[in-house]
Figure 1 (cartoon, rainbow, N blue to C red):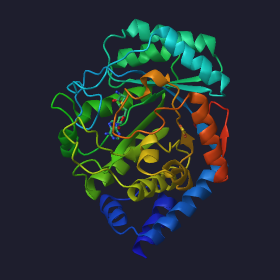
Figure 2 (figure 1 turned 135 degrees about the vertical axis):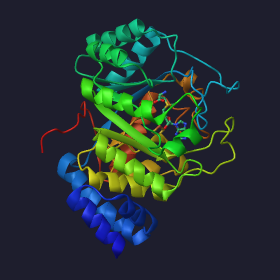
Figure 3 (figure 1 turned 90 degrees about the horizontal axis):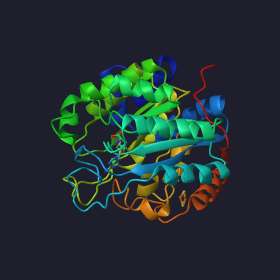
Figure 4 (figure 1 turned 120 degrees about the horizontal axis):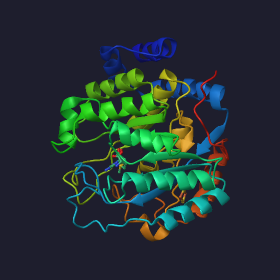
Length: 349
Ligand code: SAM
Ligand code: FES
């Protein structure tokens, strides 16, 4: 009963106080979740109908100078087989993607110093020139304001940088000492100010995470007002310090997706690969909880397995065309449609 009232309040006021968030998260039940998802779908339909946007993900390098404790491509994982795609290989992924109907390319990678600012700008510029009707999303970690600005001017439209957790203490537990939440947040504010459609997000069920910390995540997202929020379960990777930890749950991840949709109805919300990894119908359930984006992989199959952020990642053996067809089918089965469209954030109501 109290949980439903809090859901109503969130819907009416678009925000909750810290204690209310905690009570809502701790008081959740299957009934409350159904109540929430119905509202989430109502808002999803109001702004996006039954459309699901697709982004073609190109994982172009798995070299990374960082050592995040949860991540399979962290610098100190000696067992990771490192690779870097050439400019030609990346362009080839875009060509395949374009033919399959993708109008957004997401270039994601570790923080790899081997790609200079100039090379990245040329890469973005080259893709933009070849595919002027496409949006380019970058997801290459923390950089200076100047670097973000240069990439924006070169043609990048969007940027994904999850804050991972908005709680200082938890942030320190998940990351090496040289990384800070403060700097991560600064990057996000820089990106927004420059004019990127900005995406943040967090992992659900990372080791030791509490409801109070999740409350911080929801409050931070409210404060930042991003255009996108990517949330997915933490999934352990066998060669990391968190190898023996358990994964985040489907149930909690879906509940948080529903809450995000109700809090900020226009948000672009992906049903993530990690969600599809912990449950065979994870992505479908994500869409039915309020998500409206999927991001199938366009990376060459030869490198798919090497971009192993966590164990048992799905789709590592499939060609881009198979993933596209598979997702088409999956979305149709639940009454949604994958669309060929840049899928920009809806500024107008
Ligand atoms: N280097 C860029 C960055 O830090 O934003 C982009 C690549 S990074 C690998 C992309 C995302 O993968 C991270 O934001 C993190 O949330 C997610 N990730 C990494 N390891 C994970 C794990 N074990 N389980 C779930 N998600 C994970
Ligand atoms: Fe990749 Fe289903 S989405 S195989």
